[in-house]
Each structure stands twice: as C-alpha cells, then as structure tokens.
Length: 383
Image (tube, rainbow, N blue to C red; front, side):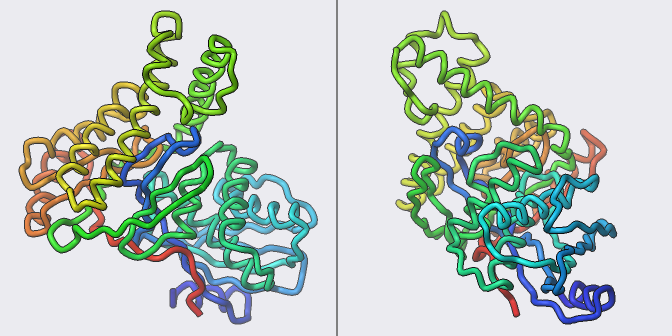
C-alpha cells in the first residue's frame, strides 16, 4: 500500500484514501451461480489495493501500477476503453451514473497480488474496490448488497461477461475464516466457519494457463444451460426459470431427444447444486474427508460433463489422488485454465508443493505458482 500511496502523490499531487478488495476462491459450486443455484465461495488474502481520491473535476484519471499503464475518461462521456482493464472501472462508474448517484471525477492508482486470468476474481476485486471506494468518498450510503449488484452489472455491460453474482458477493461480503453458503436465486446466505484450519491447509495452485481466451466459451455455457431450460419448458408446457428448478428425473425423461451436449450441461449443474448442499453440511459437521471427496466429484463433472477443464488442470488434480495427505482437489473458477484448490494436511504442505511442482515442470515445462490461502474479510477502507 505504501508504494501505491507514493505513486498516487507523485502523479496527482494530493493525498489519497486507501482501500482493499479481496479475490475469492470458490470451494465448490462452479457455473451454478448464473443458473440460480448454490455456491460456496470465500474471500482470500490475494487482494487488490487502491489509492483513490476525488479531484474536483469530471475526469477520472487511472493508473494501473502492475501494468504500468494509465487511462483517462470523463463521467460525462462513458464509453469502452481500448485498455481492457479500465472497462471494469468505467463499467462501475456507469452504474453510479445510471442510478443517479452524485459522483465526481477521481484519481486512482491500483495494484495487487491477484494473478490475472487465474480464476480468482481479479476483475470482481477491481469492480468491488472501486464501487466501495466511490460509495465512501462521495458519502452515498449505498448498502453493500446494492454495491454487489452494481459491480456485477459492470461486468455484464462493459466487460461483456454474463457472470453470476458469486464473485462480487464474496469480494464485498466475505468474512474471515468463513465460507459463504449462497443461494443465487434469492441471495439467501449464511456463513459457515472453516474449522479445519488447525490441521489442514487450503493451497491454491496456479496452472500458469490463462483463461482470458475463454470469455466466449463461458458465455456459450450460459446459452447452453438456458437452451436446456427452454427445451424442458416446451416439453412440459411449464415455465421453469433456470436449471435450479429442474431435477435429474425430469431431464432423464428427455435424454433421448435432448441434444447430448445440452443434456450433459444440465446434468452437471443439477448434480453440482446437490454437491454444494452436501458439502455445506459436511463442513458444518466437521467432516472434512466428505468435503474432499465432493471436491473430486465436482472436478470430474467439470471435466467430463461441462467441458471447462484442460489437460493442465486435470493433471494437477490427478496427481493428488494417490497422495494420502491430500483430502480433495478440484479446479476453481470458470475453467479453461487458472487454478486448482487442494486441501492438504498442514504438516505435509511443503512436501506436497515440492512434489507436485516437480511433476508439473517435468510434464509441461511450467514453473508452478502456489498460494497458502487465508480466508479474510471482504472489501473495506484501510485509512
């Protein structure tokens, strides 16, 4: 944070206010959020930091410290930027303008430790940090859930990713040492304490394969899921709004007439929703072994039914299956690259990292990055 503050003062010649916004890991429940299903995310100690202050003008001057790039736009003329990263910020500002909230121009320097394109929600952390900061700086008194929804819409409209609400929800509303059991249909939620941390570590492993190229595939999966819902509606002459409202018995009636790919997508989402419910109960009951087994099942579904894994992620998960010190592993995030999460006996964490790093380097000639993960509070003002 010190370096961001110094950079801000150097560039803009006045004093900033400092904020932080975390990325997230989804413990289980992938691609269920935009299907109005269940998810189990947590905010993590890979974070985005902001030095930001009003500048008494209509201009917004932004500097990305990590990319060493700057951009500028006016709140009176919001349009997409050629710099992809700034569209997340412009998108958030657009939501304030659309909501008739009174904001002015601002200066901002931001940066952080969240790896870009790794499925740990660097985009949501950026959106949520800006939304939270503008709400505070301009004394708008917008509640946190409204900020979550504004950040989600920013991603829809300016980043062109039709994401569910999970990433933004967990970034703003995360709680230290707790996962969030979130119902994406009605936004009912509860915090589930993660009581395994004395004995087990949650280790994130970055495959080094970026998922930037997968935005079109992500949006394609959304359309495929809706195609399944539309098909069932026509056959049943009913109005189901999402896959959340379907069950396996219903879609199995049409297995022979439903497109095989669409059937697989529906099967995965319905089964994953059930896994999230089971996983939440397992955590509440302290049954971490059961939780680990459900993680493996989730990955198999993502690999074989939803087709969003890749050979690097599959290799990382497969390597853990013969390691008795690992209780569970799965890809996390949208897929097509990014990270796996692993629940590992804490005393064997170093050995696990050394072994899997060596095997991965031998197989793919890629040096692994890993993160010993802590579950932290959501977005907040530092000072």
